[in-house]
Image 1 (cartoon, rainbow, N blue to C red):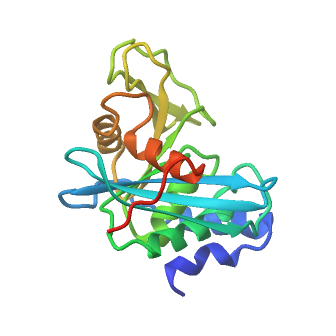
Image 2 (cartoon, rainbow, N blue to C red; image 1 turned 120 degrees about the horizontal axis):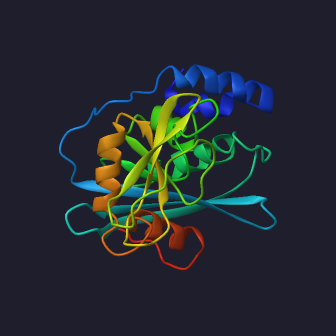
Length: 226
């Protein structure tokens, strides 16, 4: 069965959890990509009392973080809100958005968790597996795990651990600004994920990929077409 159809196999929380356990076995935790020219931010917003999902993808040139192409699409939500299973609400519509791009991004930076997840298969992992693209999860708030206090300097980070396993990193992208929470999605190491997120966050707490996709998902920016 094509990878892109995996998300539609789960019709309830029980089948979704079972599928997550299978997807987890496919995650590649090491660098598996070549030179990157583009990175894309991925975000999903919700409208009409969470009945409509808006998936936004913004493709940026890595060298200067300028938007090259972006898209936003809206679809009815087909899976209930269940903590830990948000990918099943969001991944199918994000896959539609990715399919509508003319530019194939080299890597996806997702607004959400990846390996920082009770079953080590959050949104960024799930999307990476079904899309086949390298992915990173970047969350604004901690989900699970523990970490030591960070130094105040930009670039300071501490590993996030859960049950004795390193599952991500708390990363300070700007001096004395609250950290963000970085995790592997698919086909990338944690060290490379940290470095790329820092590269994409030269001015603000959040990487520019996330900022652009967030504005698009909220209707505060217009899509950019080639």
